[in-house]
Image (cartoon, rainbow, N blue to C red):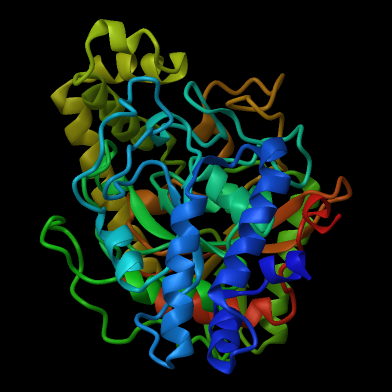
Amino acid sequence: MSADLCFLSATDLLAAYRARTLSPVEVTRAVLAQIERLDPAINGFCGVWADEALDQARASEARWAKGAPEGRLDGVPVSLKDLMLVRGKPTGRGSRTSDPAERAADDAPAIARLRAANAIFLGRTTTPEFGWKGCGDSPLTGITRNPWNLERNPGGSSSGAATAVATGMGCLALGSDGGGSIRMPAGFCGIYGLKANYGRVPAYPASAYGTLSHVGPMTRTVDDAALMLAVMAGPDSRDWQSLPAPADDFTATAGGVAGWRIAFSPDLGYAKVDPEIAALVRAAARRFEAMGAIVEEVSPGFADPKEMFRIHWYAGAANLMRSFAPAKQAVMDPGLRQIAEEGARYTLMDYMKAMGEREALGQHMKRFHETYRLLLTPTLPLVAFEAGEEFPVGSGMTRWFDWTPFSFPFNLTRQPAATIPCGLTSAGLPAGLQIVGQLYDEASVLRASRAFEEGSPFVAPPLARD
């Protein structure tokens, strides 16, 4: 029964609290027990706040007992990525340069909204150092492992967040995504992840990677992601690029996709995809036809933007590194130091050229979506590879974005994009379908995701079911 509680969705929990069939204390205890049971093998949490979580749960239980809940997530457990400020808590950022004695004076905007909604804060989830790569390891917290196979990578940088949701260690997780950091771990771990439109969820302090970095929910169900986004969206004066309050709250996810014109690109015109992944994603795209959409296989028609992304990413790392003395730099991830060194060699004209190319890519996709409401692609071109590695051993790759051709283009264009599980390979590892929407249109991404989910509900990894 305790494990069953861990896999209830946020919407199910809220309904049960309302009906007085479950209490937030009962659920929080079950989730904390799940963390104690599973996380020693996974290493998805770098801090668990059990006593505080139970205090929050007791306060929530009292409100529900009076029939007076406060906030849309009252009593729902959530985990928080260790890149974002939490009032009164240290921020490790996966880095041995962090000071565990330093406490944040304020919550980051998304965390402040979750707190105001009376979500229960379970603790911090792991991330690679300063979120610099798409893998699950850092100098501070070591290796985080994929719950589908502990020898495999969970993806990153929202590494622990994905493992927590997949295994019932909380039904909601807060992630961020600068080049795929929500979608990649969600894809590898078999959960739903939404990179909201840039600015939809305000961010403070700003990411080292600037306007590439988006904030969004990581969940087991689409409706939970919609609810979490509704809570977090809206402007904040600390983020001057945050968007105005949306016209709707994203939770109207029903309605299907009949009559929608949707593009499907199996490779974006340049990516190499594992045959098993390609077959699963193609079958997923066909399901949209069965749901009444008009699906056309078409490349969006842009060249591989990897070099453009590299300049943006490496320049951000170089700017980050400037704030650390040489003694601090010496204890940082060697890969982060390497890309920062390369980023420091770029000229202003190199960066301005990349900025112009980014603008052109954004304009191109704006025109593309005048014809197609959505774009479907694989989330990732390969299955989860070795834990603790930046890229597959023996692959000839040199950096993490060599294996992420489908995610980072849509950080450059700022569009909303989600990943949803679309089956398992013969090795029993998840594959993901990416659903990309036009600018500012998370609502269509969520509605299409919900329609697809109705035929493919979440499946927990065997580790969590044993």
